[in-house]
Image 1 (tube, helix red, strand yellow):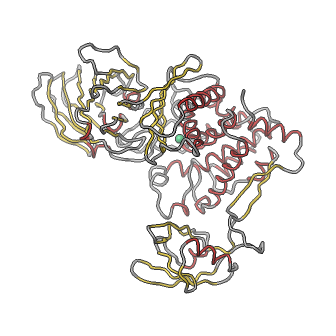
Image 2 (spheres, protein in one colour):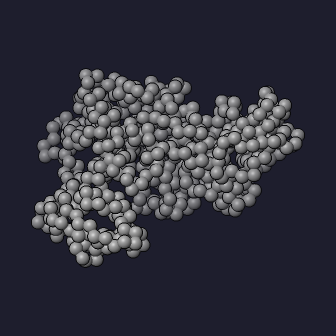
Image 3 (cartoon, helix red, strand yellow):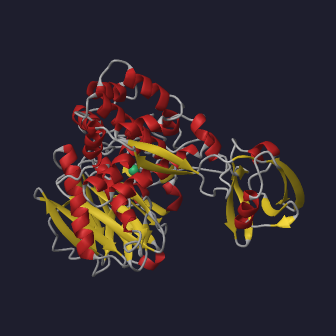
Amino acid sequence: MITYTISMPAPHSHLFHVRIEIARAETGDVQLSLPAWTPGSYMIREFARHVQEFQAADGEGRPLPWRKVRKDGWLVAAGPATGVVVSYKVYAFDLTVRTSHLDGTHGYFNGANVLMYVHGHTREPLILHVDPPSGWQVTTGLTPLPPDPAYPHRASFQAADYDELVDCPVECGTHRLLSFTVDGVPHRIAIWGRGNEDEARLLADTQRIVEVQRAMFGGLPYRDYTFILHLTDGRGGGLEHRNSATNMVDRWTFADQYERYLSLTSHELFHAWNVKRLRPAPLGPFDYQNENYTRLLWLMEGATSYYDDLLLVRAGLMSEERYLQKLADEIVQLQSQPGRRLQSLEQSSFDAWIKFYRPDENSINTSISYYLKGALVCWMFDMAIRARTNGERSFDDVMRYLYQRYPIEGPGIPEEGAVLAAIEAIGGADGGLRELYERYVTGVEELDYAAALAVVGLEPRWQHRRPRPDGQPPAWLGVNWRKQGERTLVAAVRSDGPAYEAGVYADDELIAIDGWRVNEERLNQRLLERRPGDTVRLTLFRGDALIEVPVILAVAPYDMLSLVPVAAPTAQQVQMRAAWLGRIV
Ligand SMILES: [Zn+2]
């Protein structure tokens, strides 16, 4: 049996004190490792760099020799000792949903950051004791154990195995706890921090989100659910877990940005089905020391991103108009990334570890987001299936089919063929959906937005965000700018634009156009006076060198889109749109 005890005697030090008691039948060396990444956030982060003061002893407290065998691995020469006690501290001062943060106001940790696993014992039940400062409560999705009178401040939990232990982040502090039930299943919202939230509205809307997702899948997949909500000074993010999620939003989000809270909450909850239970074979049980490669993140994050807002519409928490505008904005975003012609959804999924999670100035030219394009492609399949089945089936059925077919107890979705097979099982196997899959998932063909929109009686209306007064196409440089103090720098040069051809580099500082000083706004004004085909002279600082680069302006691509109803929709289009966006009572 492995028992973890985590305490925080000096929160201002940001140090979690960890003690691992190992009671074992075998003898010999004990090997421990701290994960290099945490599931849901696909990047090697080397959490072991925050470990300090590692010690080992036998059951009687006699020190045992140990040495490091990897950057994240420790080997204790325990010899014949069957009782081994390991202790160490972890520095935790990184406030994100995937890391750990301890200060005078709270202690938040993800197990993968702080709890080492003992080799050979990861599939066994584990105990976690949490000893917070007095006056703090402890909230987590782990199964609680009865209180121990000997430790009045202690909260104790059990986990079926190490995967469960680290899949249940823990919030310690004086947070508020709101609660509601759906189908008799308890849900809690643990709120750290304060802002302009309206508790009653938060509670009602979160419950509504749970109800609508439960309706889609036909039941809730967990015994209880905990939303850990961090209200911060501008930071955001979310991370899904099997029966909890950590969501982080700016504390002032709840007035004019409330939709962000709703979308994030909807997104992370949807993961309780999609990725925490229905999952690709490589995503659980996990290899915590190395990259876990899958070509299916586009379905895990794409379908989740597709349904997060769509289900808000069906819940009555987002208007159809707003939803269609967000969908249009996503289309514009994908179409403004030349990388869509180079990197497929499968490649983007596979390389998440080195590309999506580690973006740089070249990313827009070589890669896409499997969230963004994944959501759009799920929408494409949704529209295609509705059209092919006369509205009788949809991508909802694909998700339900996959969820039934690949339960949590099983080995997960096979990497090859299984998702296409599910889509064809729902929408027909005559080859049409396979062709879409090959074009959009394994291939890099342009998405046919007009065809998808026509199914629900909409059409795309492309425009220029900054139109020329005379209605002619505006001229374009193909540069994304960023501000650094008063300076305007090249953030990225689009490989499909004229500045790329002319040799403008990332980080060049904008000084002037045709001899006149400009910032980004003035540059855009000047460009409106020029025509595609004109040559402009850009003055730039490249490092310390002042240079001039002539650029032949191109025709600006459309960068604004509205999805508008067709003039005379058919009865079927009206019906399809209602089935797609209609409110669930
Ligand atoms: Zn997600």
